[in-house]
Every structure is written in structure tokens, then in C-alpha cells.
Amino acid sequence: APWGTMQQRRGAAMPIVMLGIGQMPSDPNGNDSWDKKLAWENKTWQLEADNDPATMAYFATYAQELDKGSGSFGAFKGVIIRLGYEFDGGWNPFGNLNAMSKMPGNYIQAWRNIAKTMRANDPKHVIKGFCWNPTDGNVQIDQFAYYPGDDFVDYIGFDEYDFGYNGDYKVSAEQPTQAQQDAAWKNMELPRINRFADLSRAHGSKPIIVGEWGLWQLNDKSHPS
Image (spheres, rainbow, N blue to C red):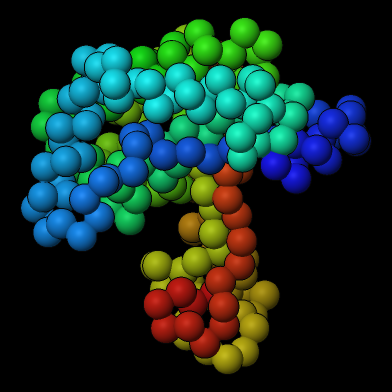
């Protein structure tokens, strides 16, 4: 809500904010076993792909609340919906796509149904677009096979962290040398960015959004930077 209030107050200086939301409602059985969680996810993907009214009502309500500026929302002038962010990673409840059936078809149809539902429930056009935002590298799946289509994606997003999986950065309490930083940019960061630049060009130069970026901690054995 404070962001909506700030957006109204600042006007053109802050025209659009981005809201990240899951691509399915929260699992009501949070304490279930892993197998049951996956079964729930698989069923929910199918319901969304089938445009099930009860499931899609969550997204309709979300759009209506944005439109009215009520509930937990401030009076937003404009938002970009970052839908199902990092869908290619298993840390999100909508991100176990490698274990789901009828993929990528169900994912793509679910995205399209959600986008159409939210747009239909936003008569004030507070929603200015949808951002398709995987991670910066292939975690589980062929990300680009899950692109929902140009009519349903307004922005291509990715998340880019200064994070050395490939050994460019070592675990150390010291800042990386300039040579290490240069190698990480050349070998790790720039190739990831260029993948998405190429994807944008292939789809009519869709605008690119960096949905997340940041630096990881020194001396962190799992996240050397």
C-alpha cells in the first residue's frame, strides 16, 4: 500500500512499479510431504490450463483489488505484473516444472489464461503489462521453450546476480581482483545477458527488465562473489 500512495504523490516521477506474484495460489497443504506438494502443483497447473473458474478467481480478485486501490493495495497508477518469477527454479511453489506433466503446454496456456483474466478484471488499465521472468540461466528446464507468446508478454525479464558458480570467484574474505571481476563479466555475466538480448530481438525487440540483481557476500562458501 505505501508504494501506491507514493506513486500517486510523485506522479510522473514514479509512473510504474513492478509487482511479483506467484503463478498459482498458495498451497493450502503446506505441511504435506514433497510428493503431495508436487501432486498439488501438477493438479493446479492443469486447472489453470483448463481455465478453471474457481482457480482463476484468485487472479481476477487480484486485478480487481489493484483496480480499486483497496484491500492491501494503495491506489496504484500503473503496475507491471512480474508473473511466476523464477519459474525455472524449484525453490518456488510454481517452479518444479521438470516434475510436472504436459509441459510446457500447460505452463503456456496457464500464463495466457491468467493474463487474459487479469486484463479483463482491470477496466481502469492499472496493469500496464506482464513481465516473463526466468532466472539468468537454465536451472531445470529449457526456459525459452516456456515463452508464452508475444501477445501475452510485454517485457522479457531475467535475474542477474554477481555469483560465481563456475569458479570465476573463489571463496575469500577479500574483494575479488580486477582480473577476477573481468573474467566473471566476460565468462558469466555478459553471456547470460546476451541470451536474453537475443531472445528480445527474436520477438520484435521486446523491452528487457532486470527483475532482480545484486552482489553476494564475501566468504560465503555457497555464494562466492
